[in-house]
Image 1 (cartoon, helix red, strand yellow):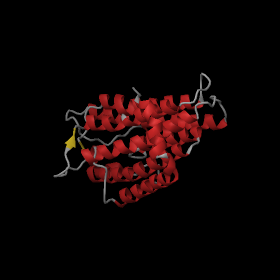
Image 2: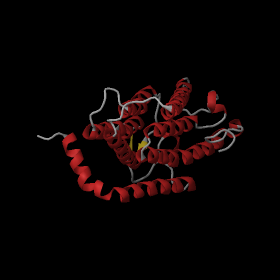
Image 3: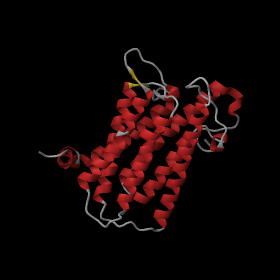
Image 4: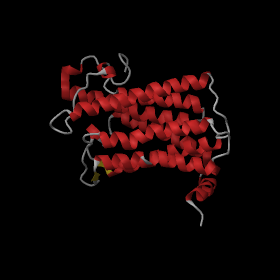
Length: 269
């Protein structure tokens, strides 16, 4: 009996490879469209502090919904990597990059969720759209990592710069998230939102988003493929409008206490 890994290349060869150019253009177009819609304020991803109930669409537990949609990315990347893996040296460039991908998502999908004191419910439509997004991007990344696995891991200028950006962004992302969680954990009323005043939070309201963008730019410098850079595009198109929405939310809730904080880039945006 064939395994799932055996079926993956057949499915890709039939339904994706012949239309790869069209599908790539469509995926980039969807990213830009998403940015335009989110920037207009006519639609917000309904999770976290921006959760909005809908009379028709059911909701799901916040932690369960977040884990369900985020775990798809490392699973898809690992599956496609295994399906297309080309044998290479013991330490390969793309083997290292896969480890970094799994490192990020092990925190994002599991550790941070389990340590979070409370997560607001999410709408099912938001969870399903996020699962689809992570399936496509994670699978594309995994496919390219597998195909490039024959390359040895070489420490050159591009790799050093990319890794430095990845590490700086990853630390900023995680430290900002965990500070916010620890601050909320001290509140008697679980789930109460606060205005953080630590580290980069003194300058922007979403340093975790800024860190994630920098992280994936560094990753893309190391990987150097269309899949990685399109993932950066999607990250920017999703997080930049949400950071601005977060700033508006903080101003409505905390007023003048927000001060001169900007959304994402200190003093600029």
